[in-house]
Length: 171
Image (cartoon, rainbow, N blue to C red; front, side):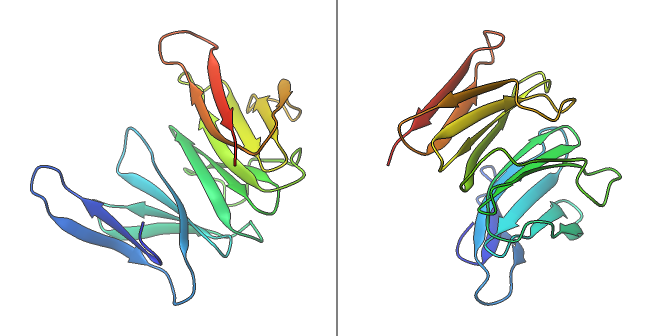
């Protein structure tokens, strides 16, 4: 992402291709790939998320349920998480639902980190409120919460050790 545009670069051919460009004044603020397909989710400063098929070179859908910038996105199969300055985490099933499947409202400031566990059974969210929450998409309430001393932006689940989660906070 660069300013208001999103590009893809091919390591093999060194070719650069523009995926999309938002209207003037609308900056790109987050990106994530769906690991098994050619879907790319792109978040913007105005709260929109666009889903692009980069092979077919077309925008498949625009999601506009956030009221402020989308600072973090995370895909797991057909489930897309978006976190925003509006303090919400939204869960979408990109195959069907036009509206969010679930809305999580535990953060009291901007959501700035999201990450699915490798098995897709859980996800963690971090916020500028110094809080990290762990959820299951099957429940409405957090399964765990952890307070840090600064904003939680860095979140990573171990691929090798089940249930091990690293988080980082700082300014």
